[in-house]
Length: 342
Image (cartoon, one colour):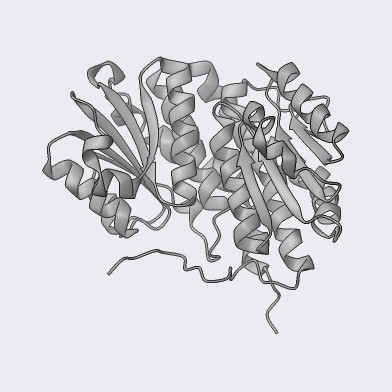
């Protein structure tokens, strides 16, 4: 009998090696990628579907933060079906992201974008022989992100890290590019130190709802880990910006609620206040932060590039929750690895 979650477990644990391999691909194409001049575009749009839409949200927030260039993350179907509400006048740089490279909405959005002559296209995917990898002016293929399981883990972080490398490259921040080389070791340390915590929380049958808080570039990452909890374990799970959680959503806090906060350094004091309030209302709180938290990253690198480290422990928690409920993380309910519309 095949072990439940065998592939998902391997893909989560192998992420640090996949990141290092992806950064090597980015370095090999550095000269070509440096030809992208952000100043020549009215806007940058990152797009994808499902998990890669959340890559797009996180990537757009980070690029705008670092460069000052207008950037947005939008679902590929919106670009394809509602282009007039997606594009502004002027030239657009479209960054399309897909694990498989053959998701219908993403391929169709890119084809329509090219046909309309709206700007330049850069694609990010994991398979060189798929349609998306032939559509762009620049096509980046990251084989280390390939997966056998349906729910994205290794693919998500690998593709996301590539967008972080692009942001560092396009803004000329060499110190960030250099610091990214340390992320693999940091990831291995995290997975080793907090596997037991993820197992304990995942197996806790008193928890019946999960809330993931992240702001700025971390909001898209909170969305993604929330999706992992839904996909793998069929649990009630929602993401929120930190301050938004203080409004209507906090009415959902009970002793059976777990609130996981992706606390930043820049606005950490304000975010910590939200988490303290959630705990005072009876919720169980887990904080992930560079230091002084339940899960400490201890990366020593700039906040702009360490955000990927918020993900592995949350992925493991979703994985363990799935196993504890008798489910198979490799085979989420109703889902397929590639979404194709007919």
